[in-house]
Length: 256
Image 1 (cartoon, one colour):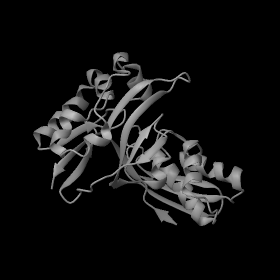
Image 2 (cartoon, helix red, strand yellow; image 1 turned 90 degrees about the horizontal axis):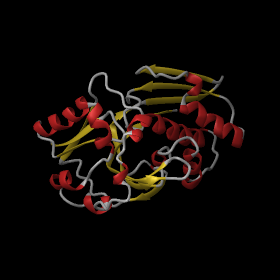
Image 3 (spheres, one colour; image 1 turned 90 degrees about the vertical axis):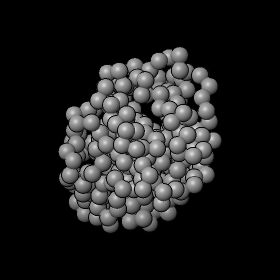
Image 4 (cartoon, helix red, strand yellow; image 1 turned 45 degrees about the vertical axis):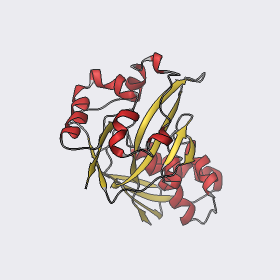
């Protein structure tokens, strides 16, 4: 069985405040982007994990696909599998590639071994693997709160026929999650911002004044190349441009 786990972008990202457990509460809109994806093949057989494509900085046994298999193996007794993952989504870029791989693995194993898990069951399993893994179970536009794991589908007017999403990463740039959170301005917490669910109903041309990613203020001062890429996208005619997640990827929405 072969599938193509896709990436996501964040349309706006508000850091609401710090939680007692050390994590942060967020508000964001997740939007799947299917043009940028990995290739994931799973077959029943000896337990193996093969990684191709973009090189990862982790051992195969630590890959989220393997962790997803272990979760279902321990919970439901599924047999061993051979996994081949060809990476096309850059890691550590705010695009959710690893989370997508994990969620697609759960979905594939559920089908391959006829486990009968419903959407809620798989989302619960996915949330144990990573904050935004659950989003990729249904893989449709959603409003996310909590640490990114509380999801509500949103009304989304698909205008893909009118514009295209372009995703780029400045050469050599990488932003760790710890760095992005460490540089946050605490005075943002609790600051009223436009409701993202309402903002995206406005014309795309107005999003520049309405939709913001709080991590840009944290990341841009120490990564001017990322800020420059965003401005370059506007110079190239983007209707809207933003860093996604905690970076380093930047996306632009361009007219077709």
